Image (cartoon, rainbow, N blue to C red; front, side):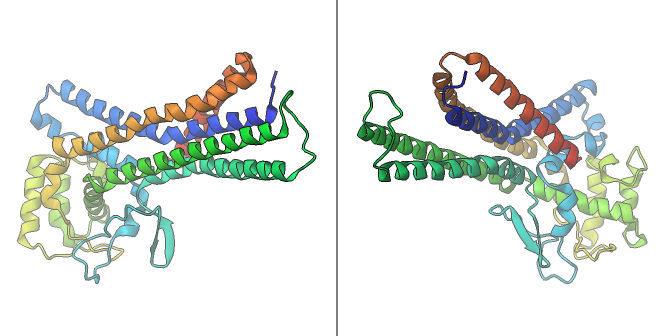
Length: 351
């Protein structure tokens, strides 16, 4: 049975929180590989015919799916500038250093969905570690101040217990510091996924097309008619169009070049000029996709560092359980089931 219930409970909770913290990184790699495989299968099924591939709906492309996954698509409208803004951009620049931003006196989540997801899923781990560390310091200080301390280790003196506990505090401090450093590096890598790729620019451009398509104003008919004419489906949603077709992008670019200063009409007075439309074909190129894939690979490599942070508490737990590994097995199984449940609930709420 349990030999040190307090220690073992702490380690079990720690393991659970570490596993929960890993979920966003595992999910990110899974989604990237999934969309990449879909891309590969589409090319295979279409015999790698460029013309047929270009006629695929937007919703079937890697760039669209991964961009919608890492960015909060439903929050995009909050980032548009208004028509009277003096900025040369249609939308706000991406602030990679914060999880919350203030727009029109409203405090909202930044557009970096996976960054926020990882931050929130890891928050419990750090709060738990800080509370536990403070509690252990309190125990250590109380131990030094208590002259009537009961010797809880057979054959040990009070001084030996104090020295052992001091080294334990040092090791716990090092563990927490390393975890904070590791966590900070991952957060920085996640911001690079947004700052060093074209996902944000691409999705904002597609959002502009989506607004024009859905509102279908006569003033924007030249753009809307081109998109609808070349789409297999007449559904007024950009994800169901074939705008990636080189013929479509060429025609759109011709319209755009006739008057680059035009601000397209829309119900919410957003500044829509189809900024970066000349890069529409590039956004679906291998170069643009590989930027994201490489960043995802860089981030996922850090999952192996988690092994260290799991092995240490597992080793301590195995010693404390003194061979009762069946309890450890149940803890691991429960942690995995609980983590998967949290993951599924989160995805259900997001959908």
